[in-house]
Image (cartoon, rainbow, N blue to C red; front, side, top):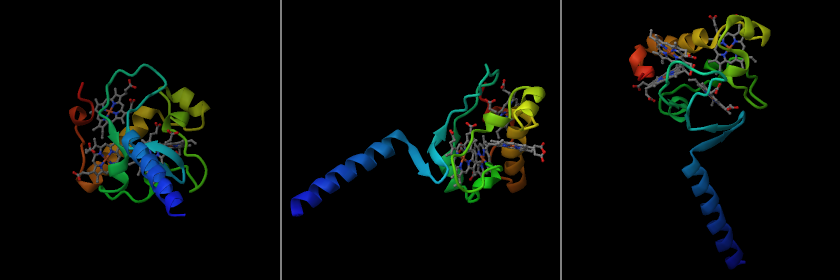
Length: 129
Ligand code: HEC
Ligand code: HEC
Ligand code: HEC
Ligand code: HEC
């Protein structure tokens, strides 16, 4: 019995360690990297600073997932913004998002930073080049 317990804890510690190293969090909406590198499905002109998903939902106090995942109903796999918001307005309309990725990311990200007077609002702070 004691031995089984020890084996169990060793395995548990190993599994948890692996998850921590990989920097991935499991959420009710699926798995998400703690630090996201945006991968638009087109060749992006601007390089974007990695987005710290984990800190936004913890330390920065953005508790409501729908502040960003505005179409998510609280269960089921969360869809990427790029599923509905694409480079061109026409393509975004066809996918049901209506607005381009350029427009929505700037509105969502910069919009909140401006409102809270916290977080980057200048081009260079988010696009180092
Ligand atoms: C400040 C904005 C913001 C908040 C708040 C936020 N997310 Fe995210 N989340 C994102 C962005 C941006 C992505 C990347 C989407 C993409 O690649 O198109 C993402 C991706 C994800 C993904 C991965 C989707 C995929 O298929 O790659 C999951 C799962 C997720 N978020 C869950 C959550 C949950 C659960 C919450 C609430 C606890 C939350 N998020 C709060 C912005 C946010
Ligand atoms: C399932 C499709 C879908 C996904 C996924 C999605 N959106 Fe949207 N988004 C829409 C639709 C549809 C609208 C238009 C709603 C309207 O105009 O009333 C919209 C509108 C918006 C707007 C308002 C634009 C404006 O100028 O009024 C923002 C901001 C936005 N989305 C950000 C995001 C972000 C950030 C993500 C990812 C975290 C995301 N969306 C994921 C479908 C989606
Ligand atoms: C609902 C509010 C909200 C939204 C939406 C939001 N942020 Fe933030 N962001 C914050 C707050 C609060 C901080 C913390 C500022 C501080 O404490 O100095 C922050 C800080 C940051 C920082 C600087 C610190 C760091 O983690 O590197 C970056 C970069 C950033 N946000 C990028 C983004 C991007 C990209 C998006 C859109 C995908 C986004 N944010 C959406 C509230 C928000
Ligand atoms: C709060 C962070 C933030 C700020 C501030 C910001 N952006 Fe962005 N920007 C983003 C995000 C997130 C994307 C979408 C991610 C992507 O396309 O790789 C984006 C996308 C873009 C794109 C499209 C990239 C492509 O080719 O797909 C351009 C161009 C751009 N931004 C220019 C600017 C300019 C110019 C400014 C200043 C007026 C600015 N951004 C300010 C976060 C920001």
